[in-house]
Image (cartoon, rainbow, N blue to C red; front, side, top):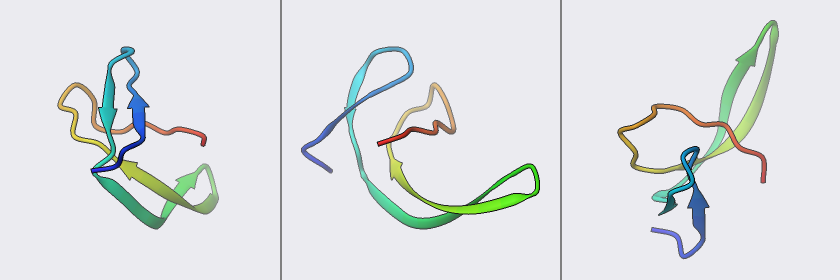
Length: 51
């Protein structure tokens, strides 16, 4: 787990379990590669964030 705290969409704070590097994300007809921080939350299945 990371020492850096992440604020969830409901305002709760949690730790990142790690980072998955260069995941392809398709938006309309464009594909971009992004790094994803992984958190363990059952309330939601995907959150996109800018860092």
